[in-house]
Image 1 (cartoon, helix red, strand yellow):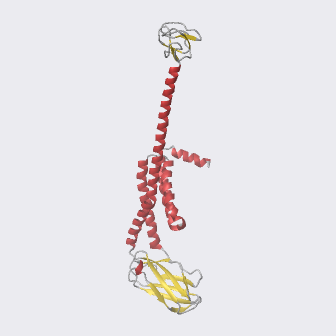
Image 2: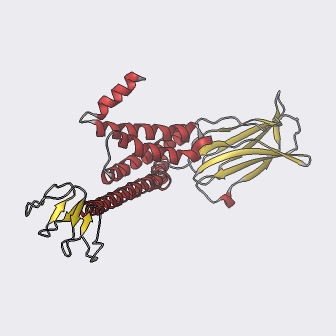
Image 3: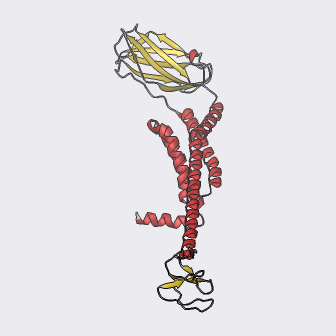
Length: 324
């Protein structure tokens, strides 16, 4: 741990510290975004907050204190994050492999699709096994087009075409799918109970060039409206907090200076008295007048107006009332 701290300290003191901080922030935020979006979807709601915090504090830790430069860096960072996310989503669509689906009660198993990719007008084959063995059950295929109108999603019913060792096999063939990116799911009405499989990805019969363009655009939009917004709010909040601290510090300094001036005036007034011979101001600890040379008694003075004897601590003459 000490070695790591020393290494980070050395990097922060180097001329390249800011560049290192920006590169590290870029690497960490892009990696975190891809990992969460592709493999840790259960914490995707926390992703914007985590990315915004890392994008701000990593460069700041390595010396990027100027908020204008930090804001410009944020534009570049979130553009790269968005394009990286869009590219990863496109790769997922273009290279996915169909996963078999089953219902939780295993009434429907081995739900699958072939082929996984195609073009509008191509025939796609879907099949699922009903383990109860019924050949006339109400087994349905449900398709959801991620690009299209949900009201136009196909919902097909078929009877079993043959039996297998597991049960009755239900097959669905269609060549009327509109261009899009689909999800498929099987369901069956078992008496009065409805049983269904989880959804699975496929098929894709959209132009992959259009898929790439849409993926890059959607990834960039997501990056800016969910992550960049929080990042710039964080910049504004920290700027406002620093500005408030500076104002409070300046006000405290001003109060301290005013208090010092008042105390100095009071001290100056308290530390002087008037010579009874010439009227000059004399320091309280003086043995004689610095103006006329008159010597003072240790414990008493004379009023400059009526020559009444006074104490050094008197502020006015007890005889004539003259203020000293």
